[in-house]
Image (cartoon, rainbow, N blue to C red):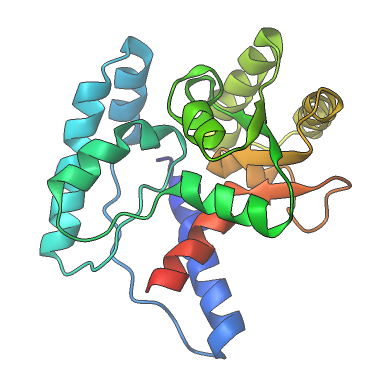
Length: 218
């Protein structure tokens, strides 16, 4: 939901389209950019019904504007996925399904789930992934708190620190040692720390997986 996330989605949608279709090809995109401060405040109080109403209204604006497929461009806000789906007639592409599909394509069955505390400790990602046959490993509680701090104090503010990159990689290694074969970058901004194609361990960048799924449906 941060503008960093919005920028990343916009860039990747255009980059992937040009790579597959050639120069000057661009996807037709409608963006409804929300005030992230409102979302953060509601997240902190656990008022997910209110965030769901905001996202549903956003989805309806996009549908009225002519969108034929929709995406919630944030891992955490898939907590409201069903509310958004119920609010519109057009398909909503699930980032969790995109992750599972890419994990299967790699022949892997376990994932280190790194994201916000709402993703790591919540009941939206792990049950979905487990239901799809994926073994999920989440960071220890102190590691979750550090990732949460990193996301909201740094990455969503456009701040990338080498010390945080090092900490992130250490947390990823710890999860992999506990059985999470592939590291899931399940926060849009984590792509600012780790490049899916250049990492020293298997990585699925959920944002890139989501973009590929969106373009496959377009």
